[in-house]
Length: 399
Image (cartoon, rainbow, N blue to C red; front, side, top):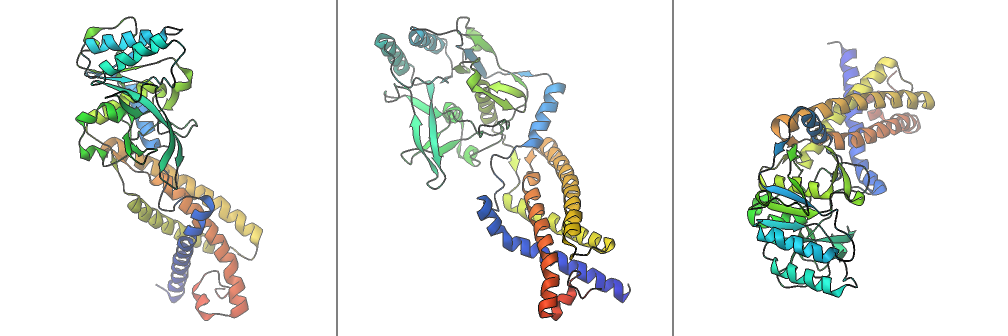
């Protein structure tokens, strides 16, 4: 290799290492500005690889019948006697021998029909050994790492009544609900289980709680769904029975299988827990290291392209335009490659590989750092004449 070529490669390597190192130093500032820890890619990031896998599976695979979970729809119950009707329904399901009953209905306060309230409360107390009711956690404080308020059914204080929070892992937009929560810090600083976890708590062990926000397995499943006035004893006996409104528009959420009622999402969550076969996760620190390696290779590439294009960093507008087009193109191609890797990792190895969630922010930070680096370096070289800047391709000494 010629001396000139060796010098060129040293300059490219020096610039790539310097740019990545400066970007790493800027990460705490970047995290402070955008209020996101730089080793955290967000739990709410869309699990796009699994979403894609399940949506494809839905089109190609016939839904399997569920042998453990059934749904009961109460959408036809309304009016002044609704609470007494629900009480009778829950008592009937209990008498039919359901293994556990999950009631996804919140009665926030007694109605003016006190007799119906009394009947419902008496029924709840009678079936408490098999039933779990919902509550809602509100006003999460990241500083205190717990919820500051909660909403309960009016019979919440009755002896033996079990509750679990029904909050789904979704931030209110159209992002698919891909994860569920196992337990959270409650208002009184105690740990409380989610609605689904509380229903199957007797069938879980400590290893099931290793990941507090696992991915829901949306493998297409046919859950028997009965109307409240057409119960099928065979679909209730010795099964987990979820009771709720299957037509409530306010409880419809986006999932990898399309829009789905909250009760059905709870059913998929129950099924995921009962299978004791969690989807693996790539540790965020390993993802970060891989992302830095990709970022370094990306920087090597763009610095080399700069040399071939004879980029003049003193022509700021031309330089920014060239770097912007190059950055967008490379980032787009990298994201396509990483999405495919994530899809293969999920479908073949059942591992959630979320590098596509952390890499773009690192690439953008490196691209920003590179623009600043290449503009500032010639200024420093002309102002101070530092000899070590001769190692750089952008120092002003390289031509």
